[in-house]
Image (cartoon, rainbow, N blue to C red; front, side):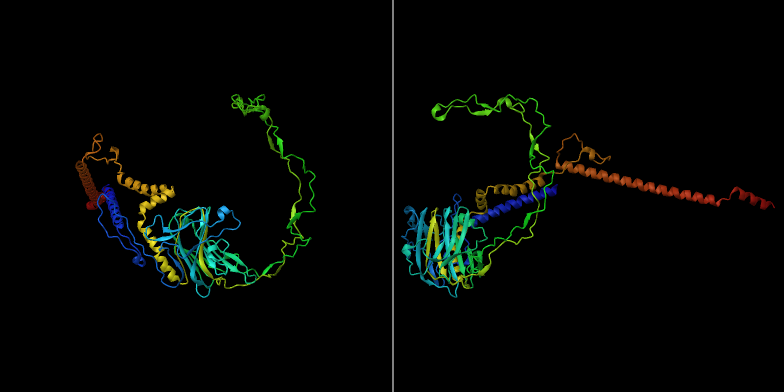
Length: 600
């Protein structure tokens, strides 16, 4: 019992120490922001100040520093100048669309995010909803696909979530017809990449236009869908980094927040395939008229049995059925509602004669049924249905007919689909039912290290600042439970169950034995009629007396046992001596013989 109470007190002390330590860590954690080493140049820690007891500690502040490319780039934009300098707003109209919505008149602004943790960090914001938006900018030089990879990277934040709309970019092909002032949905592009959502369909596009070397026509090739769940990137209202990497060996990678979510090869993992099949079905080939595709046919030799009755009904009336007692034959199942009244605006000339609506007959509620009783129908045991001959294998079966194969006249083989049409501009051509989509930190380059450095100085700084301002573990758990109420059950079980077990273990004492369970000795026993709870000292004295009495009794029993053993041993020795003496004395016969010898 004492061990249980000691363990209980120890657990409570450890719990209090852990809670106090956690609170101290949280208090100190609010004053300091740990930023990764590669972000040290962009972060200035706030001087630690001792907050007053009545006011909470100040929230951390991070000073934003615009990212700078560390190598050669084809395009880079962080919007920190606060203007749309270098960008062209489209003045075009969509074809085959009502004039009211055909214009690309959606508004764009350069501004900070609504809940920014980095004052001074600006981006391009899609302002309008339910409108067409189009904006584009020229690259420093055209990108030509040769021996270097292509890396496209930018940030997106759906500040208000997203109902239906996209946030993808288009890399506009280098053509003589390219006019950024007239950028629209039909403008030729080389690659389209980025997130898109409508309804519950969450997409991350990677589409490229491939030129048929035979016909010169372009065809869109869609990369396979990612296996990863993309929903969080659209709903968490956080800034996410989207990266596309295309390599000269035709491999590609799609990354979100520097994590690969899709990868493959341009020759094998796009739809439709880049290269057409070598052979195709002959469009002029026709199936012969006598071609038999039936694997089974009715047995021509089968004969219907003579006793087969095709006219027997499937159901017959049950002749053994008996009308239940109390059946009301003269009462209808439904009667006119006696409480119904003809509407005041009822016009018999227009609406006809008014009749009260029908309701269930109240007299039938207590009876087994009303109306004319009829025998129930049961399955006919003699029913067989229409006779059909059994099916057998078709001896003339020739299989499913297919047209013959012929060489594909349009066949070509392009083993380097990476070498796409050069592009010279980047554009956003979007329709969205949600406003305030935030874009930032575009970069197009050929060096992955340059792209990663740019990401660390831009998106990485946002991530670090958001992490520093995020609530603690308890706050995150509460926020998660608001989105998923079933988590409350998990929390309650996780917290309440251990507490219950600790209380049960610590507070459940050993059951005291009853008076009948005490050992029956001559030692004094506690009076069962006295109070059950006595002082600790008195209980200890009684226990000592009981132990002493038991020990005395045990000693007395051992002494008696030893004396008994000694007595029994001495008695046995005396009996043995008497037996020996008796054995040494001569018998009466022996004495008489000895006397005779003496006389003689």
